[in-house]
Length: 251
Ligand code: 6PG
Image 1: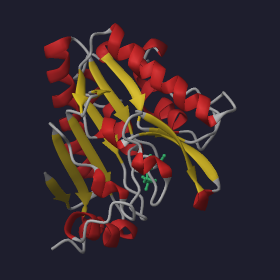
Image 2 (image 1 turned 90 degrees about the horizontal axis):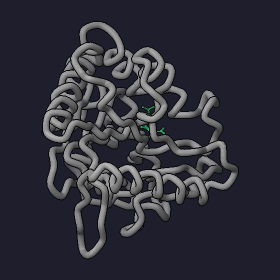
Image 3 (image 1 turned 30 degrees about the vertical axis):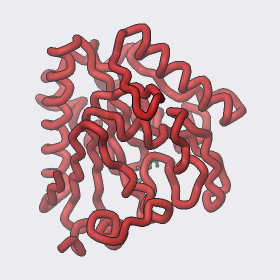
Image 4 (image 1 turned 180 degrees about the vertical axis):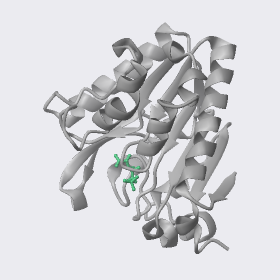
């Protein structure tokens, strides 16, 4: 589903309602909701909305388990940290218990070890809680109830950047992805696990994304150049929630 909103406030309201709907359905079915959060700046106001007003009382947050779609290779208290942004705008206001937050352990120096540790963390959670795991081409992947994603102006999503190695990962669910242009290694979930989610919501705002978004949704399929084009769910619902400025070139 592609939905264009006249302003960011209305996009966030729709996203918050959808979050509540998906969360309560998961809690009703299996007494647990697994969500991988997006980083960057776009989701910040959604997290603030979910942790305030009437939304905060519409979910049993004790049954919500938070993961992260990606993370920067910085300490958890760094201003760059996606965990820190979620902690300030969601976890602290909602008083989320530590055991409900499963984050990349970026206090460890080595990015490869962080990625392996996170893969083990995710598998342990899904195995211990008998959460759904789906086999695709003889490989098993955890199935998140919801994965939130942003979109970079270069067509990246999570930390799956154009022409980087992580784009080709078909087995592992995490990757320490060397991003030359950022002179850094980013930590990211991989496409197999993203495409295995029950629901994925893209949150996109800003005129700077408009040209890339038009190519991603309506242009030639060039997944190396526009990694977000690779997000196609095996068996789930994909929502593109787009603010008007970012949608300006969509036909
Ligand atoms: C990150 C995000 C990244 C983000 C896009 C869009 O770690 O930065 O996961 O994929 O979603 O770069 O960022 P903005 O929301 O700041 O435009």
